Amino acid sequence: MAAIIRKDIRDLLIAKHDQYNHPEFILNDPIQVPHSFVMKEDIEISSFMTATIAWGNRLSIIKNASDLMDRMDRAPFDFIRLAGSGEMDRLAGFVHRTFNSSDLYCFISCLQQVYLNHGGLEKVFTEGYASGGIYGALVNFRKIFVLSGLSGRSAKHVSDVEKGSAAKRLNLFLMWMVRKDTRGVHFGLWNGISVADLMIPLDTHVGRVARSLGLLKRNSNDWQAVEELTSALRNLDPNDPCKFDFSLFGLGIFDHF
Image (tube, rainbow, N blue to C red; front, side, top):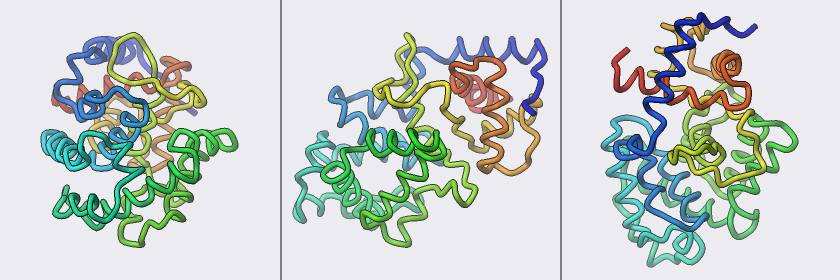
């Protein structure tokens, strides 16, 4: 059963959403990297790669995601489609925490397969969603990505919800692609996935704040916790529960709640 949200907590979450969901949020967030592109596929690919390395220090995420886009000539879709071995050499030496250049080679190769043989990221996620909701979307994406040539070492960078992962970075990517409002932060490029079905990107900050507010009882940051917290947030807005990611994230990062 979803948590019953007290009025003071409800008011706090709504106020913090209004405080942080505005274009100035982009200036200090990794989402600024895909916001530097215009073409749909460039936004998708830059968002996916930025979300893939979205753990650790935010300034480091922004710096390294921007460096990656520079290595791809600021044209990620063309790079994905056309890069041969010479162009791939430009990726040598890239590293973000435990994600290194060998992982990056695998990811670029798999993205090539996704766009050349599977219709692109939107189609892969949307087809899985049609048969199994967001959980199905994440399962289908990982299956196709791994079958496209992801090695065992690099596969650990793609969350496996079938093993209980919270899939924070993939849910973050989906939120960027699917959520649409008039505030200008998220892109809302994909129409085949309902905003109402999105799942909260659960990390340590969001989990800590959610538990402090009584929205989450489960101790582990796993898929069950994602379901529990998202269900609680649907009590606030059943049509757009993940808008309160702004509230929980902002309270944890900016307000040091």
